[in-house]
Image 1: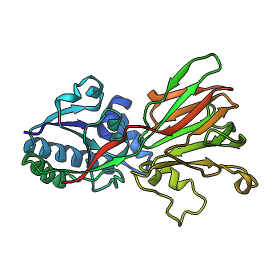
Image 2: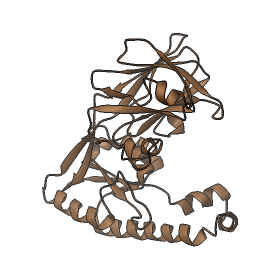
Image 3: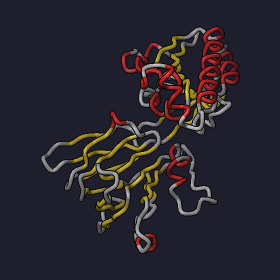
Image 4: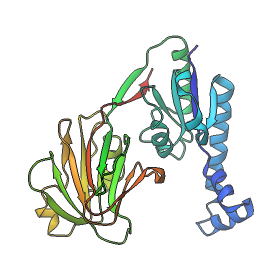
Length: 298
């Protein structure tokens, strides 16, 4: 029997009960948000119903995402993310070489650009896997960075599944840094609201929406042998003068960024993976050696 570890996220309703302390207070807040209660609670009901149906049909271990760092992943054949895209990206950091399946907990309202399975589709796929069928695996490229600080410290960011942001700690301040692709050549000084680094998985989100032509599709394959970056909100003249406005970095290259600000680097929008980026700190980004193994279909 194949062993599945299913990682479940809290619904928005469950998170808000914790945040606000009571259903009454949460509903008061929703009343100010275009009467969002019916929409939020309906999604909560659908997600709980989908989870209960899954638990009834599939013998597996089901855990909350807060438990994930403390579970021995090697005991399981497949890791399953039950939630949305952001939850999937969080779970992916624990996948290592294990096949990961993205299961959309509420297809009725969530697009899930990174998620290949709805609840019914997943149950059919899990049954085939139990019968010995071979999954179709995609190998997604990731990005990792090394930070060299002026005081001699060296830190590693760990692999990024979706995106990395480089910007000022004070988000209303200008972001200022030097940048070069390939590790050689003249450094270019850039001033903007921040630098966004994207993998193929991240290219369908914020990266694509940062582009100046919203009618064009700037996404690229999740298994592409490169990653890309984009300068966010550069000056009008900089849009035509910057060499590294939207660079592409291949397998044998690296993207170097030298800070000229009190900055920060955040991996996959995770506050637990945010690093100081003070003046003189050198960040080098490159494709990670290990890829994510994502089950596309069975």
